Image 1 (tube, one colour):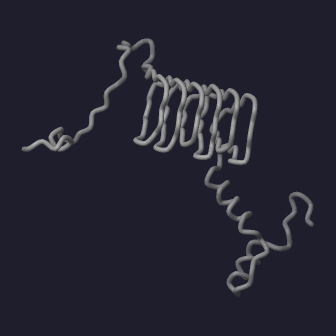
Image 2 (cartoon, helix red, strand yellow):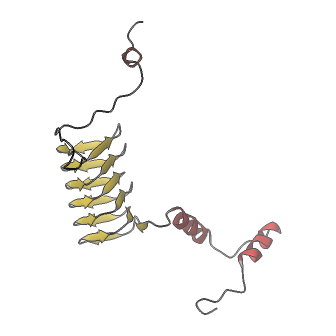
Image 3 (cartoon, one colour):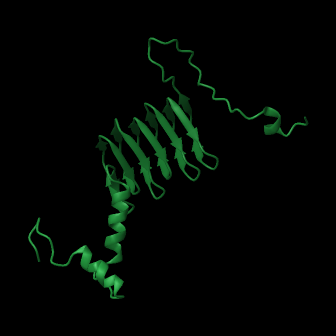
Amino acid sequence: MPAMGEESPHSAADDNNRLARGEQSNKSPSTTDYQKHMAEHSGRDILSSDVEIKGSIKFQKELLIDGKVEGEINSDGVLTIGENADIRGEIKTKSITVFGKVQGNITVAERCELKAKCTLQGDLKAARLVIEEGATFIGKSEVTSGTSPAKSVTGRPEIVRNDEPIKAAFGARA
């Protein structure tokens, strides 16, 4: 077995040659799948679906949670709650995307996105809120103004208009 930092005499080129000759590689498919998965999520920390945590979590940049967490989550970064996740506790972060289950209040400085199959039981406070059709949200929401104190604050959420003609949207006759 080679020491850390040394290369194994069995290289990726050997694997490619073996595969070309129809021989089996001795690398397990799970190792390759794991490497692909990690490459897709480079720069993002991941708590996988088999992880369970009781306590508080703090992180800086990006975190994907796909496991169970019971406790507070605090960050100035971007949080993604995966499809398998079950979160029970308060969440305070810069931005969040929820695919799984959250039971607790969420406070977000910027954007909150509730995806189609997610469940949120708790109050929500965010500057921008996107709720996809099929999401379950039980609680109160407060869309705060994302404006700086120098600008006038109306206290009402911003209305985004679609460019489609209204008659097409409601099926009215021309």
